[in-house]
Length: 275
Image (cartoon, rainbow, N blue to C red; front, side, top):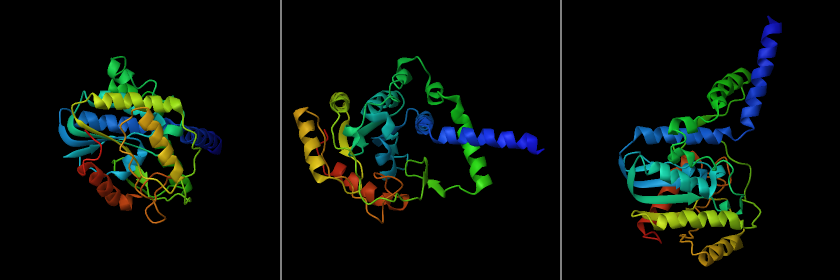
């Protein structure tokens, strides 16, 4: 009996570690949001939130008047741009709010976003593209089995974008990152902004929440935006503290997301720089 179960245990443990250490979970959040799109096909919303996980964890929506379709930062500005084109085939909205983490302009251009245009080019169906890697099917099964067996599972809750989140808090007090601005990612943001300017709906580009960071960076990146004619609100990110920080430098803890939601709705209602 042991001869049979030991290899199975080692095999499943190896697959769990492989899947956990990959970026395939980002396909999971894409699939989750795609399923939401299909559920609300032809529905009209007052506000659509899109962007990365800083917005996904910061904004509470009711899926009645507003909807949160944020992905993860691994898709970059280019992923947001592509996903908006997908979204526009399924739902309508009055206001579009794009929320990205403060350091997005320092990151490399996304590899994961390269195949997203297939979602609206007809080469791949939504369901097929979202499940691009069939191993994603096995990840929840392996993970749940492994954590129940070892007792290592985290306390999971439903995040504000309805995707499974966590109650953990990151063991950091500051958001430290290489402040070197990537001109290629700025170029991607410029193309996104041009798409937003061409839309009939009111649109906003906002910074998501963050732990304290180098304040000079915000002024520098806004100078780059200005010179590139990028219409960004340039808002001060919702401040993360020891009390309200979540499991990342730019994630609000689920217990405090109502405060960050109010913060960003306040920017929108003030008129800001949206059109």
